[in-house]
Length: 267
Image (cartoon, rainbow, N blue to C red; front, side, top):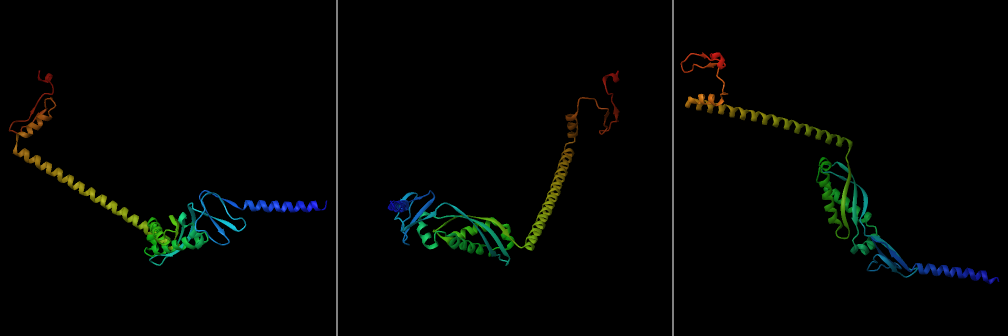
């Protein structure tokens, strides 16, 4: 009788050990991940794909590496060409290609952002901002972003894919921001004044052209009338509305004659 409890305890321990042994002999890699089976510190030359896999119990561990696109924030600082400090908040979108899973685990412990991506992006940003004034950086955000992305990709190489860099904020000193804002207002006012001046000049030129055209038209009509005295009579006839005029002009030597308005007045 006393031996039964001991046997039960031993049986339970054996069952628990067996269950743990069996459960630790397989693993599952989720979609979007790749697995690295490390056995006694030794890294294999190939990774495990999605699905069920088996390993040596107790002595092998599985490290999972995501190959999905990931996003990390980065606070970076740099100097402009006019030696103004620029603080930039970035979001970096990147992913690990399958071909680099093993190398990244060996060289960067599976997390390459802090040791590979962040330093390269900061270097790229400093190179870009060093070529622009602080005002130019504030105004040309998309240009700064595009060049920083290009330089960062060159520095990182093919080990990682930097998909995009988003500039969330560019912070300058308050005095510098006020100076840039004041300059922008002045430029807008200058452009407005220039537009108003150009509009006035165009209107004046249009009026001159219109007046010259009218003067030329009058001159042409006067010359035509002088060359053809009967042209006036023709113009009067063309515009006559069929009613008898009250006065006939004596331009040809006759007296002014008042004519009746209607046929009743002739009777």
